[in-house]
Amino acid sequence: MPIPESDRQRAARGKNPMSSSVRPAGRARVPLRQLFRVASVACGIQFGWALQLSLLTPYVQELGIPHQWASIIWLCGPLSGLLVQPLVGHMSDRCTSKFGRRRPFIVAGAILIVVAVLIIGHSADIGWLFGDNKSSRPGAVLAFVFGFWILDVANNTTQGPCRALLADLTGKDHRRTRVANAYFSLFMAVGNVLGFATGSYSGWYKILPFTMTDACDVDCANLKSAFFLDIIFIAITTYLSVLAAKEVPLGSRDRSTPFQEEGLEGGQAEEAFLWELFGTFRYFSAPIWIVLSVTALNWIGWFPFLLFDTDWMGREIYGGQPNEGDNYNAGVRMGAFGLMLNSVVLGITSVLMEKLCSKWGAGFIWGVSNILMALCFLAMLVLSYVANHLDYIGHDLPPVGIVIGALVIFSFLGIPLAVSCSFSPTQSHVAFN
Image (cartoon, rainbow, N blue to C red; front, side, top):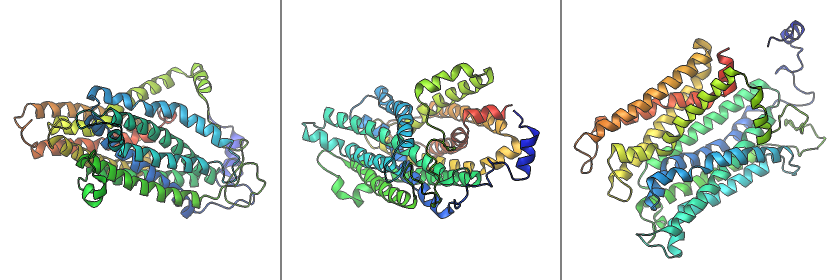
């Protein structure tokens, strides 16, 4: 809806009270160095996500959970995101801790992440203590599932307050907000690249030999070692982030620091709970429902890829099976390498996103990315068909051309994934109107 002429004239003269050039009196502009350090926690969080996405679906099958049941474990992700993030946002908006509103939840989430990855990495050892053997590992499965669900809850507990903290620091300074979001995305990309690179390396057990035990073989030791690195990353980045943020406790009258603590009366919107979200559905127009439907179908396509990409590489391209020879594990590591390339392309695309949208239009970019995603998934089906009709399956490694083809598909998928992560349904709707 066009703004009234008087508002437009005031904005042109720089007198609009909501203009990014106007800041509350007495409040200094937050330094870029501070935003950079606060956003660094995204690197530690995303490092763990990358390990989770690349290694845990194959590992849970090695513990004995059937392939068709592996995706059930991942239900905790969307469920915790649906419930935990709104609840944590609601609680952090009202937190009166002397350490601030966001930092207590960031630290608590980081501690939960450390606990969760220790449980997951030591799940085989925990099961061994409760009577597991090489052929039957129900104790390890239970420990893994318990740690896995804690990890997803912890990730969702940490991510929301991290973004909210950056929004609090920048306040109504929209330029600083864009810079803060760019820093956050940059650290996410770096965390992805480092995490997938860690997952693709097979020699961590040699660097940390104590990770190998009677219950934990080479593959298990590599996973455990990778999670030890994750603990180091999350500890360092969380320390840098919470130390850099100078929060004012909610209700304090001190406004001398460059931190906007307006409580619930400022520009910071409260988190909506489920009943509030569902209540807004009746106000949606037909175009918004179409965009939401396309977005839902989009993510229905993304989640099987994100959960089974390395498993697909190990089974369909390398022709292996969990716990049956080395081909499957070699494929999983190559899949992690492909995801690292995917993250590099994703990061480059994210940097160029604003220029691409300015030149071609946001709606065009969004539509083309969905078509490219569909073509890449179709190419995966074709490549699987070709690989299954060659005579190397079961007794040899795949031809170089097949592996390169899979890596190219993984890399190209970074483009539509960047668009999917950058565009909200509202932005997509606006782009087409």
